[in-house]
Amino acid sequence: MKIKYGGLVTDGRGSIAGNTFSRNHYGPYVRARVTPVNPNTAAQQLIRNAVAFLAAYWAETLTANQRTAWNLYGSSVAMQDSLGAT
Image (cartoon, rainbow, N blue to C red; front, side):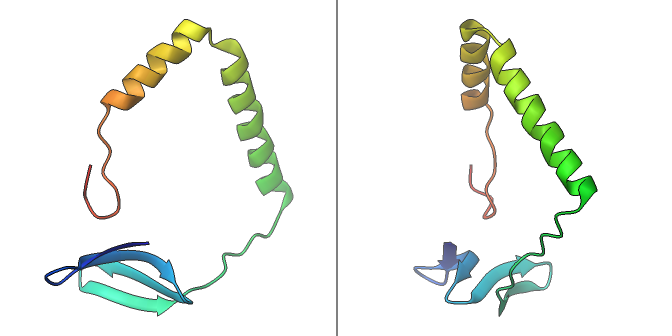
Protein backbone atom coordinates (compact mmCIF):
# COMPACT_ATOMS: atom_id res chain seq x y z
CA MET A 1 0.00 0.00 0.00
CA LYS A 2 1.47 3.32 -1.07
CA ILE A 3 -0.17 6.58 -0.01
CA LYS A 4 0.71 10.21 -0.76
CA TYR A 5 -2.18 12.77 -0.25
CA GLY A 6 -2.48 16.35 1.08
CA GLY A 7 0.06 17.95 3.40
CA LEU A 8 1.12 14.60 4.79
CA VAL A 9 -0.35 12.33 2.13
CA THR A 10 -0.46 13.33 -1.59
CA ASP A 11 -0.99 10.02 -3.46
CA GLY A 12 -2.07 6.44 -2.75
CA ARG A 13 -1.96 3.10 -4.59
CA GLY A 14 -2.80 -0.37 -3.39
CA SER A 15 -5.47 -2.20 -1.42
CA ILE A 16 -6.55 -2.06 2.20
CA ALA A 17 -9.73 -3.17 4.00
CA GLY A 18 -11.44 -4.36 0.81
CA ASN A 19 -10.78 -1.10 -1.06
CA THR A 20 -8.30 -0.50 -3.87
CA PHE A 21 -6.83 3.00 -4.23
CA SER A 22 -5.53 4.03 -7.63
CA ARG A 23 -5.26 6.92 -10.08
CA ASN A 24 -5.98 7.47 -13.76
CA HIS A 25 -5.95 10.55 -16.01
CA TYR A 26 -9.11 11.83 -14.26
CA GLY A 27 -7.45 11.68 -10.84
CA PRO A 28 -7.39 9.39 -7.81
CA TYR A 29 -10.20 6.91 -7.21
CA VAL A 30 -11.23 4.08 -4.88
CA ARG A 31 -12.96 0.88 -5.96
CA ALA A 32 -13.92 -2.40 -4.32
CA ARG A 33 -11.08 -4.91 -4.29
CA VAL A 34 -11.72 -7.96 -6.48
CA THR A 35 -10.08 -11.38 -6.54
CA PRO A 36 -8.47 -12.06 -9.93
CA VAL A 37 -9.77 -14.98 -11.97
CA ASN A 38 -7.40 -17.91 -12.42
CA PRO A 39 -8.96 -20.13 -15.10
CA ASN A 40 -6.03 -22.61 -15.03
CA THR A 41 -6.42 -23.44 -18.72
CA ALA A 42 -4.10 -25.71 -20.70
CA ALA A 43 -2.65 -22.65 -22.48
CA GLN A 44 -2.00 -20.93 -19.15
CA GLN A 45 -0.25 -24.03 -17.79
CA LEU A 46 1.86 -24.26 -20.96
CA ILE A 47 3.10 -20.69 -20.51
CA ARG A 48 3.71 -21.14 -16.77
CA ASN A 49 5.73 -24.30 -17.42
CA ALA A 50 7.73 -22.55 -20.16
CA VAL A 51 8.56 -19.61 -17.86
CA ALA A 52 9.56 -21.99 -15.04
CA PHE A 53 11.78 -23.98 -17.43
CA LEU A 54 13.46 -20.85 -18.80
CA ALA A 55 14.05 -19.43 -15.31
CA ALA A 56 15.66 -22.69 -14.16
CA TYR A 57 17.73 -22.89 -17.36
CA TRP A 58 18.92 -19.30 -16.92
CA ALA A 59 19.89 -19.93 -13.29
CA GLU A 60 21.75 -23.17 -14.10
CA THR A 61 23.52 -21.85 -17.21
CA LEU A 62 25.08 -18.63 -15.87
CA THR A 63 28.43 -18.73 -14.14
CA ALA A 64 28.96 -16.99 -10.80
CA ASN A 65 30.76 -14.13 -12.60
CA GLN A 66 27.88 -13.69 -15.05
CA ARG A 67 25.36 -13.60 -12.19
CA THR A 68 27.48 -10.99 -10.41
CA ALA A 69 27.62 -8.90 -13.59
CA TRP A 70 23.82 -9.07 -13.98
CA ASN A 71 23.32 -8.13 -10.32
CA LEU A 72 25.63 -5.12 -10.73
CA TYR A 73 23.80 -4.08 -13.88
CA GLY A 74 20.41 -4.48 -12.18
CA SER A 75 21.44 -2.31 -9.25
CA SER A 76 22.57 0.44 -11.64
CA VAL A 77 19.28 0.64 -13.58
CA ALA A 78 16.77 3.09 -12.08
CA MET A 79 13.14 1.95 -12.04
CA GLN A 80 10.04 4.01 -11.23
CA ASP A 81 7.41 2.68 -8.84
CA SER A 82 3.66 3.30 -9.19
CA LEU A 83 4.06 6.76 -7.60
CA GLY A 84 6.83 7.80 -9.97
CA ALA A 85 9.64 7.55 -7.40
CA THR A 86 12.92 5.81 -8.25
